[in-house]
Image 1 (spheres, one colour):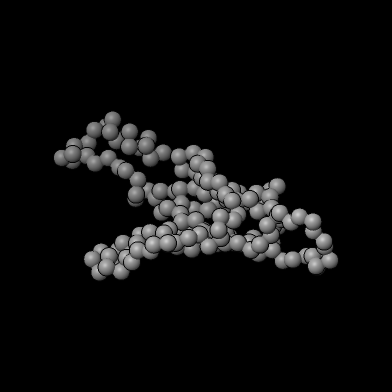
Image 2 (cartoon, helix red, strand yellow; image 1 turned 45 degrees about the vertical axis):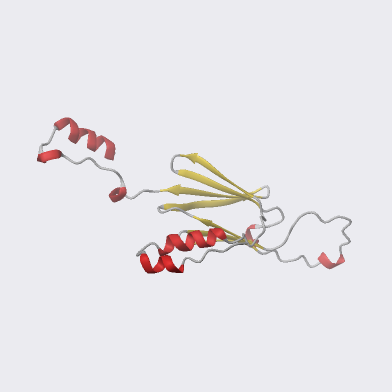
Length: 156
């Protein structure tokens, strides 16, 4: 696989090193090799859900962490005590350890996670701070009663 060296960019850009790191990490192969499979669903304008197929894993086997806008989901299954005594004719259920990383956009927060029927569901929500939301600017300092009431209604 061809890799790109972003080192020259670091000398000419300021404050975009996180973006360059994200591009560099996205270019690398996924270490988990596509396991476990997952879905990403948009529930509403500001709400999302990630579902991972984690058959065979219990709540104690899974670990979710968020650090610097990266959601890391990892699973480590502890083999059963009688696993060596079992004689499988076919073993198709993958019970290997895994780690999946999801890069979250700014202001996206993990709200909760649940495990049911072998699916791990993680609910995400984008909360844009009030300072980042668009606001109306009054031209020449003239105030209009309709404009002020519209801004108050928008804020509610």
